[in-house]
Length: 106
Image (tube, rainbow, N blue to C red; front, top):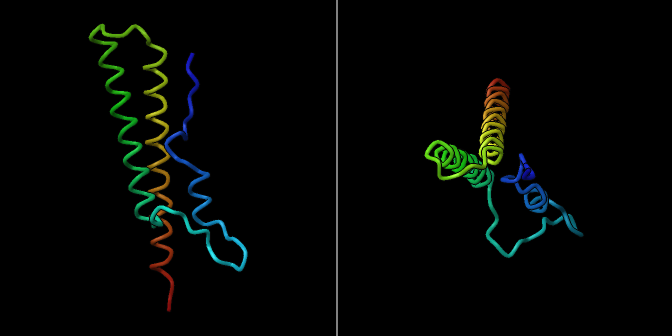
């Protein structure tokens, strides 16, 4: 049975290291360009889409008889579903936050 990492597409250590303060209160500079919030969300959406494609491919391989590994296909489908649910919940929280900011008086 393969190990399932439901958050494998989200590299939490990388996200945390982007905002980790170092001495002097300055943020840690990475050698790569600094990714902003939009880039991070875009990468996450792309990874969810990749997981859905991979799960679909594995399912089609089972249906077409190219593969007998049903467990792997089911794990990929479940991982894809969990990733999608996480993405929807993040979207809902972002919308709630936006509406909260919108209601603030200046």
